[in-house]
Image 1 (cartoon, one colour):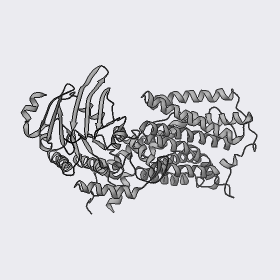
Image 2 (cartoon, one colour; image 1 turned 120 degrees about the vertical axis):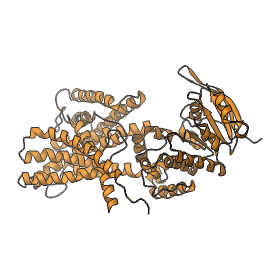
Image 3 (cartoon, each protein chain N blue to C red; image 1 turned 90 degrees about the horizontal axis):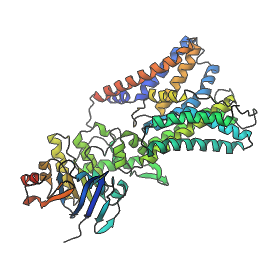
Image 4 (cartoon, helix red, strand yellow; image 1 turned 60 degrees about the horizontal axis):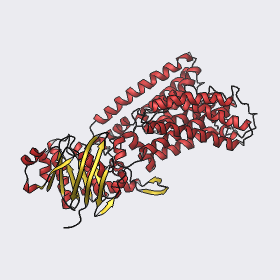
Length: 243
Length: 328
């Protein structure tokens, strides 16, 4: 078997006395579309926040392609090729699409000590291309993200992650608050990731969404993994029972 | 055409510019053409850079999602510190540098406390407003220091630059600084971080922007500009008073808000803040020139602030609701 792209070993996390993660060990293979399901408070978000650098584990290791890594902040996570898409909080509504695509990673014409002049033309051109690459058609990179629909926003977020050549894309409840049509679009984006060889972790409350686009299901309850099966060997009923 | 109109509706600076032009015309008529006379324009231009520089800093900070009530006190503390140092024999430029460094430090403390303890900057800077005001009186020892006219090269900041004696150097300083801050906000990655931090903090944090540091930097810029503006005013008047700049903090906020900056952060522009500051100065001066009872000044500013915010919100909604052809 090949080296897993991400491996966690015995991750623990306490939040002021609450044991939110109780020794989670998980191997994610390259190119896999993994669906992570579980009730509120099951530890899904905690696990994801650790991988994306918003929180740090209290115990345990994270390995990326076999190498142990230390993820201290979101920058570290992104540098390692892990991109996270949150249900709504990864875009600034009052900023344009092109600015949102490059937040925190702006291309600069020249710079001193990390500060410099934005290369706005490059930002515009590359964001148009990135958006087209995920098969999303938007009129202008200068439109405000706040003017887009929920599904389009998730599309831009996915385009951004793709543009930065992520190895692993974590989608945290990307279909929440979306209409049926928009949900179908987002699920389409996720399926597209697999074709492009990107590993994805899809988190959702909605089993139907997860079963629609993932090839492996991991269920969590009370901070532990309670089920881990290929999608073909399990069913919504079986997973629901475990939660 | 319709698209241009929509764009204009969504630009809050536009409405205030229009109001500014209208007010200037009105005061010109009411004052019997005295308002735009050379002498009066000179007076307005003398005072404008001082208020406007404070407004620039406050606007930047508000776009970043924070607030500074201590600018009025810093406005007085910086020149007082500088003057006391000069009287004590410290060279002028070193004294200026130390004064500005003190402002930067105050800005840092404002920002650091706000971020570190996660408290509203309204409270932090309210405290700092009292502390800095008190320090101003303490360093002066109760007696304002006196610097002989001509003893310091104040012409660099306040001397007239043209033969007619209309434009002071302070106008040039102010324009230069305002352009610089505008560019910082619009054209640099730092500006992008400021807007993201003020616009939606969770997104900025998730994308790895050091939003705490960005905010602290904005606090520091804001304080330094306030101190610099206070120095210009003190040098122009050649007097160093502990009560300088009282009430300045709220005028600066009013200027920013009138110019379309949102109290919630993320929205606003430096040019908007400038127009707001100009509006306030024009109303102040225009009322005197038109022989309107100047006790109404604060009433006018207050009413304008509320009117501007309500109007901007309405215009923006209208602008957004207006359907335009989006294809092609």
